[in-house]
Image 1 (cartoon, rainbow, N blue to C red):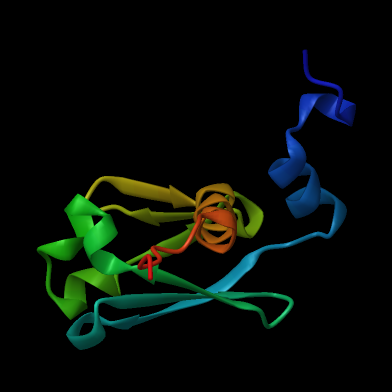
Image 2 (tube, one colour; image 1 turned 180 degrees about the horizontal axis):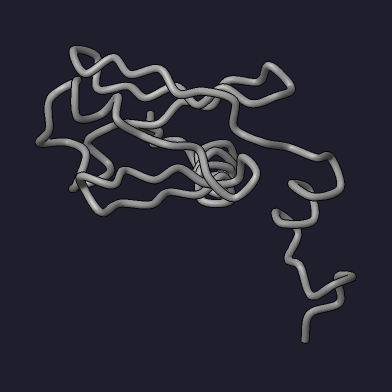
Amino acid sequence: MNTFPNNYDAIESLIFDENLSIEAIDFHPELDVMLIILNTKVVLHQKISSYPSLKSVDINELLQYKIIARGTGIHWNLLDEDLSLKGFLSDELRNVVKPKNSIAA
């Protein structure tokens, strides 16, 4: 049972309560990095190679995106690909809380 108002989960509540949105994306294929810039000036880091439809295209195709859904999504018409702010935030959270690989002494 969802206990959040409006049936949003915690990440969706954060997005809507804080009025978060994507302002721009910056691509660095040589570093396998996509930077998602939010309206709060926070920058989220994602690996381009994490997205099969994005990893094999050139920079010109990557740059042909459109910010959709009031800044909560990104769409590439040529690639028929959509990514969401919720997904990016979920990945960031997963990266923060996942255990680091440690070497036993």
